[in-house]
Image (cartoon, rainbow, N blue to C red; front, side, top):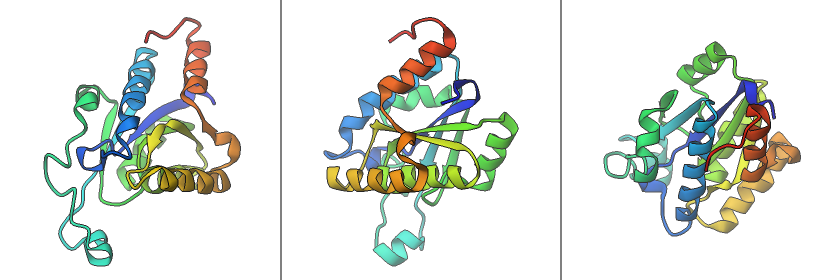
Length: 189
């Protein structure tokens, strides 16, 4: 992982995606954001918004995440989001909408480190698209979750290994170690 050219992408940490299957990811994501920010590295949040007559409504009859409080970033990360390098609003799975592609290009980020919800959909699709746009994707496995349960989270990681490479799935300890090595000093907890 090339920390000097990396950004942390916090995917869809919204109230509407946090449930008994995914709640455990809130604390690790909050810790990772705090340590990444303390190291002076850029953090980008994504916010998924559903809308009337979206494909999710038409094909799944899923009408959630259209208004607050479901669309709000979880309270544990709300303040960090106000200090983020950017917040990218999206209406589909991927981060790679025109605004985000331009943001990444202008910043010159080569490595994109993903955490958040949901592993098997928005995290996976964003990481796969990063790969296809020639960026080095990294998925922090213990700082993401599936809101449909651990089996779905595990399935997302299995597919991610095939799409972006086994070595691109890392634990928080690895990421924090990279931050510490890059800064030359311990990262505050």
